[in-house]
Image 1: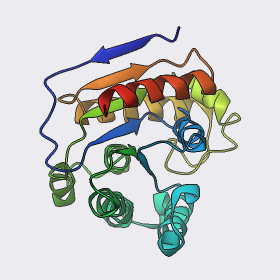
Image 2: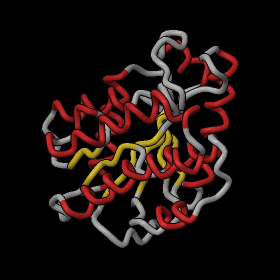
Image 3: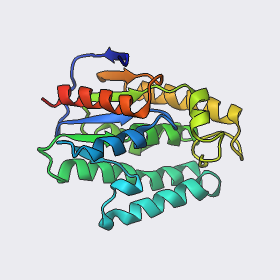
Image 4: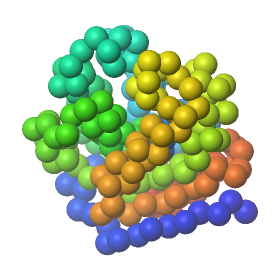
Length: 221
């Protein structure tokens, strides 16, 4: 059986629709898990800025996201990069609040991962961060805990990385693993007051998706 560690402070007052966040470092398998969940026509909404989850009218979000990861790490100031990434954050919030808000939702990373990447890009603090933190709080975070070394293998030794997933001009294992450790530290700092279920890396995609499904079924019952 897949080992699931549960860290459960008092459930937060979400101030919005019922939802959980699926979070983890780069290469953790969130996109794969969401794809498997969608195959089963789940009773929950699945919200992500990945192209496969965007509506046709939201295609601009995907185009902007690709431009950001292609050029943003070097071409722009950290503050401008944060402004560009905010479009994805606000898009997720809008879909959470406006698209059938009575129906529970699973949100891919929410603002936690993008805020961490902005900080790693050099933004120590920004008024937008306080705004993001004022968004509705999830009732649980499901964290896919994957070691940097394992994630390096999953990204085909750096061939699948973008510029916001590693330190240095070009991806190498040391720059990737250090970046992922720092990224995880910041994300954990952001979710420290939330109930968290941690799912380890030792099992395959199908088992991971099944454990996520069990947590969501329990959370939204």
